[in-house]
Each structure stands twice: as C-alpha cells, then as structure tokens.
Length: 556
Image 1 (cartoon, rainbow, N blue to C red):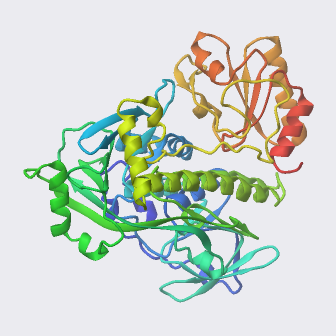
Image 2: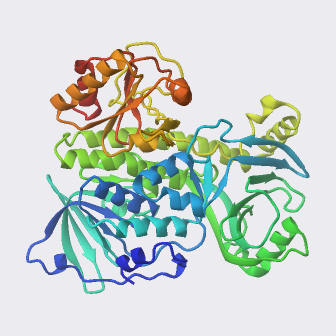
Image 3: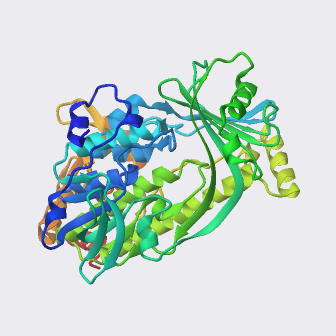
C-alpha cells in the first residue's frame, strides 16, 4: 500500500495493525551528489509523525525515514492526555482521536478487597477535551499517518534505515540503507524520534543514563464485554493477585488493557503464553468470564535520559531522548510535547525568524520537562513496587489511612498522571512586571475556555488561537483593549513576526476565560506557537511586546 491510498480510505474501517506500506525507490537515491533537505525526521512513530505534520503545517518540507513499513501492533501507549489531544487538534486529527477513543476522568484505587478512594482528573468544567482518552497506539499512528498523507510537504520513506550519521558545520550526512542498497542524504537538521533503542543515538556514540527497575509486568489486551465504567482501576495487593499490583483500563472495540505486576524473577517468555495469562485474567474477572486474548507483552522499564537533547544539528525527541516507567502515561505524551516544542523552533530558524541559538532552548526546556516526568515516574514506581520490607510497611500503612483520611490520599501514588510541564525560568519568557493571580504564569501552557465566535456560535479559546504563529489574547472591548490590540499590531510589524490577535470580551459568556487568565480590560497574554505563555501585561505598549517577541525567539 502507498501512503496516499491510506488517505483515500479515511473514514473506513482499517486494521492498522495489518497494514504494510510499499518501499518506493526515491529520486534522491539516484542523484549524482547527496541531496540536501531542510529537515530529516528519523522514526515514524507517534512522535516522528507529529513532528513531521507540525513542520509541514508550518511550510517546512520534511523527509520522514522509517526502517520498517508497518504501524504499531498491540495497545502499547494507550493513555493520551488533554494537552496531547489539544496538540492533535492543531495537527488536524484530534477529533478522530476523541471520537474513536474512550474518554475518562475518574480513577479508582483499591487495596486488597476494598476501594479506598476515587479521584477526578478534570473536576472543573469548561475544557474542550477530556482529561484522558484511551486509544491503542496503532490507531494513533494510523490517524497521524492519514493526516501526513494529506500534506504534500511530507516525504515518508518506508524501509529507509539510518546506518550512518556524520555531523558537519552546516549539515548532517546520513547513510540510509534500503532494499536497493545504501545512499547518502544530507539534512540541515536531523530530528531523532527513533525510540528507546535509537540508532541515531548509537551512531553518534551517545547514551541515556538513569535507573533500571528490577521488576516485570505483563500487558494483556483482552477483548470482552464487561459492564464497568470507563475508569482507571488500580489494585494494590489484591486477593486475586497477591503481593502485586494490577491496572485495568477500557479501550475501544471492547478491548480491555490489564497490567499485572509479575516480579523480577518471572520468565518473560513463559508469562506471555496463553496458558499463563488466562488464569490470571479469570482470577480478576471470574471463572466464567468470556474473553479473547488479543495481544500480550512482558516488559521491564527504566527512568533515564540523555544528558543533552541537542547535539549540534541533531535533536532528540521522545523515547530516543528520555524514558520513563508506564505509570502516569508520561512516555508518549511527553514525546508529542517534545515534538511540538521542537517544530515551531525549527521552522523559525529555517525561515530566518530566529537564529540557530533558539534550538538550544529546545534542549533546555524539554530536559527540564523530562526531569519532572522522571521524578514523578520514579516516585510512582517506588510506591507501587516497594523493594524493602520497610518500604512495603510504609506503603500499606498509607493505603490503610487513605480509606478514611483525605490527607493520606495525597501520599498514595499509583502513577501521577501526565500533565504538561510549566517551563519556569525559561529563557524565552518575559518576567511579569505587574501582579497577576492564577496558574497562567509565563512558561505555562495556555488554558482552554469557551469562546463565542464572530457568528455567535460557541467555540474554544485554544482552537481560535491556533498555533501557526504567536498569538496575543487581548481582553475587553473598549478604548483600552483597542489600544492594546494596536500595540500588538505595531510590535508585530516592527519585529517582522506574525502575531495573531484574539479579542476576548469581558462579559458573562467569557467569564471563565477572564477568571483563568486573571484578566482586566486591556490585559494581554502573548502565547508562543506551542501555546505556552511567554509574556503577559495589564496594558502594554508596542515596545514591551516587541521586546517579548525578541526574547521568545532567542534574540535577547
């Protein structure tokens, strides 16, 4: 199958796990001299596809190389967070993800026989997307691939394996192996999105460092009709799987994901056999339960990262740059957020809106985010899998207390679920000059809220703000807000950087937006193209807005 054939089947029922894409010889393979491309992305998983789509939507041609010719098999990454769904919205496939996926906000925690408490990840109204959607990775890759097929600036080459990488002052030379033999390809920049066993990382002699956890877990995808709500259920030391933990999630197509902790001494090959899996599932569901096994895997995990995510003209994103345990759904979500951070900066550098130095901030910001994810992931893993009798006694005492004491529930850690990092102290942010309240500090991801469109229909703030350029949220409709909007336009013209202005009236229909942004008449928030706040003012003039734009582009 060709990628454009997949696009033509959009909307049909497609078994993404069985698709095989054709290797096609490219004209670059027959060129007398290596052809130079602006960006080569290595790896067509969720992170590489998201990055390629984002770049193409910013008018940057991108070559996407993958050493295989298939999409993911098995559920793998299944929990996609609200922020990731907002990114998918901007990439043109968020609606499909949500429509197909199972939306959920509620999690329940059990200890032995009892439910000890539940939690709601999205307790407030006024967001366009749920806290999480459960969706098998093969659907996510399939929807992204279909979107990529719609974009002529994406050149996706299957069975093109990177076997060599040499850095030069102004480009990288890649050796690419294909069924027709190797060829050389040059890139101004290379984005390595090729997973935890990154070939690019190995070719450059780099490594990830961190901590390996000596435990094994079984993933079983089970197809069945089960009368339970779309919630996350987590058991500590249940009677049906004593001294271990179990996680249950609903997925689309009546598929349920079950994670069983096995212990370090478990034999991975033995535990993947149906005769070992079926009794475990029946112990959870009941001896008479009817189900079919769809896929199984046994995994171990580490929390680690590369020292630096930028190495010259090669930038690492997703699992190639960092790895975390699966508790908290921080792997794929943080990888997609890596891609979003990198895409606008690469586009700005290639389109001469910023210098190459802007790319240093990619590493600084996403290394900070990775450290935050690794910290939370490590704490969750230590709580779920205590490695000493004292640690287990502490954990069990906390769980007993959590049945009746709300304070103890804050100590229970079955995986602090993924939230986007607030990029405190980012060099691209302008510090506040006036007092503000709330969470929308410089470095935070902009919060969504209902917005009334010009035609009177209801929409959403983030969708209206977009992400193709900088955005100024101007609050109020009067002389002060008009003055602020003119200041934005003047700063944009002088800085030669496009800035989209979104006016948010201060009325009842927009009260939630005003509250979330602590807005007064004339308040302006400047959002980066990745929708992080980079500056905010009460009543700015053009000079301070231009200074903030210069800082956000790395000129200051």
